[in-house]
Image 1: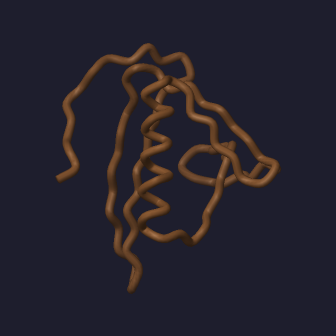
Image 2: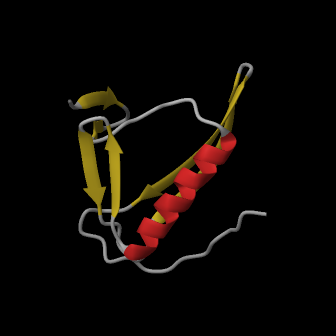
Length: 95
C-alpha cells in the first residue's frame, strides 16, 4: 500500500511503520539498522511490506528533538539523492 503526504513538495512514502516498543527493543532495532547501514543495504519489513534501500557512502544526517504539548520526540533522518555519490561533511556525536 502506498501512502501520500503533502509537504512543501509532493512526497511519496515508500515505507512506514509505527509501533510502541520498549527502549531496549528500539536500541536493538537501531543497532541492527546501523549494522546493515555499514554493509550498504538496509531492508525494512513490516507485515507483508518490504523495502531495501542502498544509501551512498555519505548521506545527510539530521537529528531533531521536538516537543508538542506533553509529547517529546527524537527523530533520526538519513537523506540522499537517488543519484548521490556523496562527499564527507562535518559531524556530531551522541554523548
